[in-house]
Length: 231
Image (cartoon, rainbow, N blue to C red; front, side, top):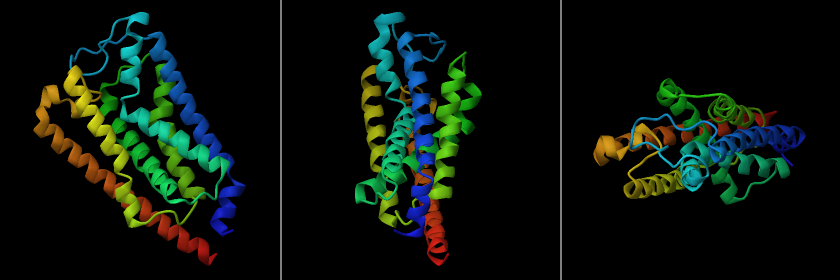
């Protein structure tokens, strides 16, 4: 067992904490969604939220909930962090990509929310808890745990580009569903307002940003792996 694997095993509780907090954020948001605790106040007709109130709109609200990039990224963190909590030495090929995916996607979630979406966010009550966990605590903690305990040596250049598959699936699903219901999760991907040209440019920008993040995580992983091998 390498030094990095020993460190990861010794501090595996951090992976468990990472998974637990991400799960709590998801669970609180889902419960509030199902109960329609805070009815939608959005006034943009092409943005998610226009479902029947109460139990009549529960299916629509559930579909909207599971269509947010934020939810996909937090679910991925729960899955990957739980896998690492159970087995910190896991290194198979698919897992390497999922680990990179979780880092890229949750970082994009945190930064896009903080920079683009937070100024227009309208929150009430328990939404402050779920929102803080999903958009701030989980992104920061996920990256911090990666920096502190790795595990190291998982990533290659190909890992960065393979990690784009899940985000591309989300984009494809979002645009296809949006074409049918004329509603989208975020303003920057709202085809009804901006058209496909502008939305495509916005998405290309996010993809480039994601690739840059992946390369940064790859570089950090390589650097910390070398330091670990020499310690």
